Length: 261
Image (tube, rainbow, N blue to C red):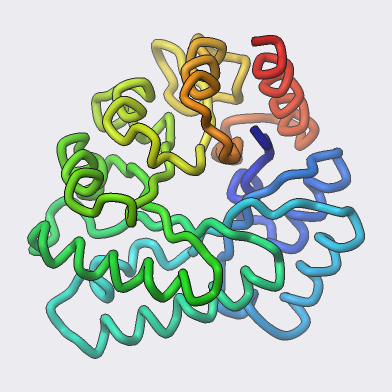
């Protein structure tokens, strides 16, 4: 399992600078959180590519800043907005192919959205198909304030969409929705392809891995037994840790736990 860090952990640092900071601390695997469409082209995108090239980084996945827009656009009843978001996300997919990233993280509609399960799956399927044209796998993340925060909804997607659907499991988002990461893992099973990692204790739900009481050994053991071969990105809030080098320390701790199983 490839373990790295999401550039979201360094927000609001500019994406190219965040990626460089990770590279300089020795992080080799990364998820890139793209915070503007300006980062998909021109000099900024060239700077991102240069860091990947010069430091030999492996970009595991990409996450769009536009996740909150997905309710209004992709999962709306207005066809022009649906088409507009598909076109926008194709720009992300094209950029991802140049970076070598293969997984695109989707939040989906918020829980209060007036979007039935059938329409939701239809729109998600359209996005999955668009990504496939670029060699990109679109994956649904569990997000507490979205429809995907419901375990039963995730199970519905898994059952109804069959082999088409893939998932990203976020540990802190599972907690915020009232579940454990183990619950979500059981619900989505072998359709998991990516992870967002963080730790927790009785007071905080987004701590650097290794500083809380989450059972990473048990969790990784279950993943290993299932044959999981995807990646994992440490994803924290900037207020949740101190020096940037702590992110690289998290990666090393997690790698040690995984390889000692």
